[in-house]
Image 1 (cartoon, rainbow, N blue to C red):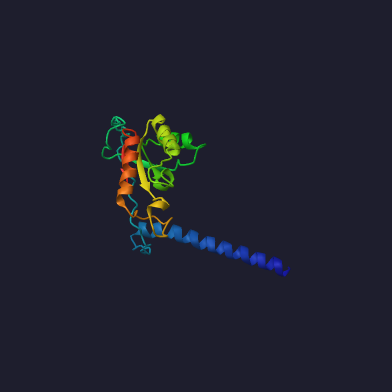
Image 2: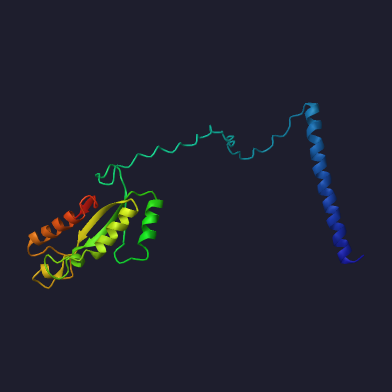
Length: 196
């Protein structure tokens, strides 16, 4: 017999012995129990607390969307809460209509748009260029939106120092007051709010 055959025979023999011992042990326990002999106590395996069965929560009712609050007329003041989104329409001739359409699609009733004093009254006090502000306010009107006009950035002629274009107050605050007055008069009932 070759060594390989002997090794296979030994392995089979060992397997048979293990099987026989296991079978004998399995048969001996019930036999001992039937005879009244004490049974060996099996080692306690560590137990984990039972996993509770998942409880079924009652079905959540589908929320009913709130009834939309009617918007006040365009000339009215802002209600609480009322939300706005900042838009950048100045010089954006090709995208103004699209952007305002997206604002409506998102459900906003207000837009905030920047109106820079330095572009509207750029060179001389009292000489206004209303072309771009008119275009923007007309587009916002056509989109049936309300506007918060953000006023900022003084023109160079309003300051005697060299701080321009850094924003800052004019030398004469009345120049700013005159500009705001002219803008408010021009867009009366078309611009609903101002941010100064």
